[in-house]
Length: 253
Image 1 (tube, rainbow, N blue to C red):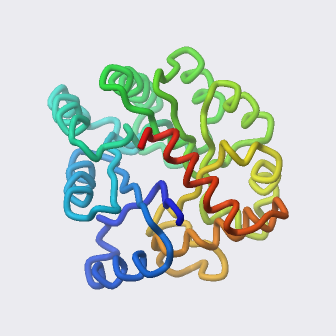
Image 2: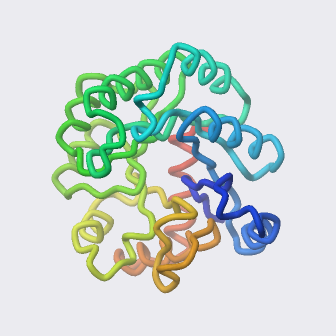
C-alpha cells in the first residue's frame, strides 16, 4: 500500500486515457492519491475528484506562479473548498524564483497569507520551493504552520533538511531522487529519519527513471519507493508502509 501524496490528475495530459490511468493506479498497489490544486479551478477539480473516487483526496491553494492574480474572492472560495470533507491540506503554496511568473514580493505576501488561512481552518500546508530556499526558510520560521506541513519534491540541502525537520516538517521525494545527477537529493533521502519521508509523483511531471521523458502518473511512485529503499538498504515494503503511516500522520487521516 502506497500513498502518492502529490499528483495533478486533473491535468489535460490525462484527458484521453484518464480511466486507464485510474485502472492502473488501482491494480498497482497505490491505495491513495492526493490531488493538489494550484489555483481556484484546479482546486475545484481536486475536490471533485476526491468526491468521485474513494482513494483520491484533495489539497487546495494558489501556486506562486498564480500569486499575482489573487483577489478577495479567491480567498473566500478557497476557504469554502477547505471545508469539504476530503480536503487534507492547503497547497501547493510557496515561492518559485526559477520561473518568476509572479513578482517575488507578491509571491511572499500570498504565501504568508495562505499559511495564515491554513492555520485558521486547521490544515497542514504543502510547500512548493524552487530556487527560493532562504526566503522560504525565513517565512516558515516567522509564520510557522500550526498544523504541520510538507516540502513537496524536496530539492534543498541536507543542512536545510535538518532545519525543517526541527520545525516539524515532512519532506517528500519524487522522480528526481531516481536521476543520476541527484546527488544532494539522494544524500538527504539517505540520512533523514524514515518516519519523516513522504513519496509522490507530481504527475504528470518529473517522471522517474526508467520512464524519464514520458508522461508521469501515480503508478510510477513505485519507482520512488524502490529508489529510497535502495538508498537506505531496506526493503520496498518497509518504505511503502512507513511512508503511508507518515502521510496518515501529517494529513491526520
